[in-house]
Length: 289
Image 1: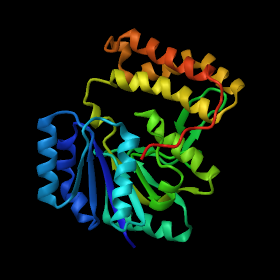
Image 2: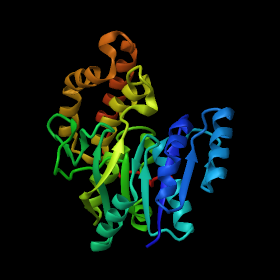
Image 3: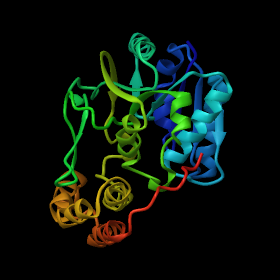
Image 4: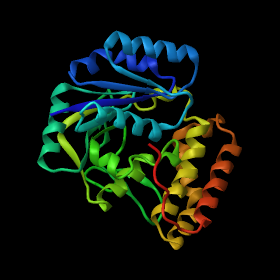
């Protein structure tokens, strides 16, 4: 079986370097895509990839998470990969768990598979994703299969590309919910492999000062983008009305209660989200690759 690990980097080369031994222990090709952040970061990552014999794709600008993943998957498929594991820079997986994902993939074609994901302290973090159509709130709910996280996501690579990959229009956040929510609609299957475990140092790519302004703004905006692409106008308006409660949830986990995040960030996200909720429904454009 030909499987390739795809990692998207944005100013996180130190995290990838910390996990180099674990990545090499998998014995699988690794493709690292660098969304440009600085020349210094580009140089560090390029040297790291050369030292470990990993493929390196340096992008001229930051195209966003989804677009970079698509390019990595295309590169992997050209190299003969049947399957791709999308792995966050702050996540890791053992060879045994990787093999369990491969075995699960052989049971049924067109699968997107998540392992059970825990924090480094072995606290459960992800075992399935649920989405409330009434409130527009996604949640990590063990056993639910409405969506899967891209923190560690094993996919049938050719099927992934056939359905268009990640929607590059999200740029950041909700693109994994969009991809996997639509996966089954287009003939694929979602599953969580309980025999496989991955570890995710949640928030490590964002530092220790709470969620970034980009996280807050794009989360709000993309929540309504998802609704516009997948839900009825009535449901979109319901999501828009429930936005204040959603904001409170984000505030609870983002650090705004400590005064770290400007209110304007929330307002920008809300306004962009409302704009999406009021747009007429139309057929989504082909996804960038």
